[in-house]
Image (cartoon, rainbow, N blue to C red; front, side, top):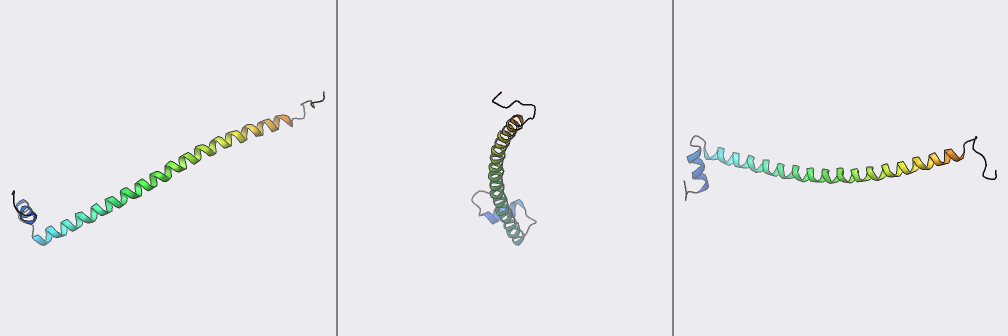
Length: 87
């Protein structure tokens, strides 16, 4: 098997397969490799988006908590049972 070209080694490994079937299989493998590379790139892009959105959500949650605290303070100041500051 050593020293033989690629087609001959495939014929030894798969004697029942014809050369055109081997070429077709090689093309299909190449197409699958291209699709896998494309999907890997898409997965990385989507991961970047999810990471970015996670950071944005965390920032918005902090802002929301700060606004809730400010609202509580305003509500406490506007209570009718609270004495005005000049008393």
